[in-house]
Length: 80
Image (cartoon, rainbow, N blue to C red; front, side):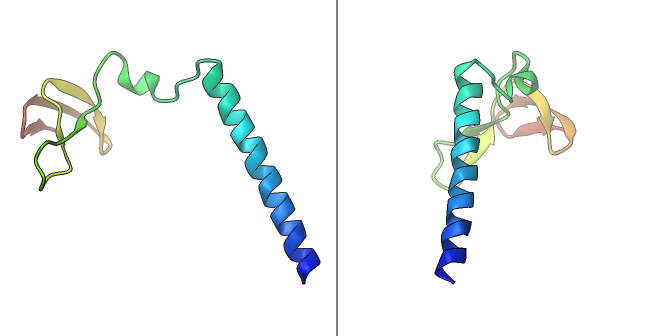
């Protein structure tokens, strides 16, 4: 049983190490996976100063959110 557990641990740690090395290599070479989504725009949700709301729409932002095009004119005004 311990041998099998050791093999599973060794294989999973090897996989994690390779994945982390690949991710570090991509980031160091300048790869940004979300750059094409932004396309010069801001992210639609922003962290809110209000203690009740965690996030709120960024004013004058537009982009794809929840599988539809979204445009925020003012805070709290979202056009889908």
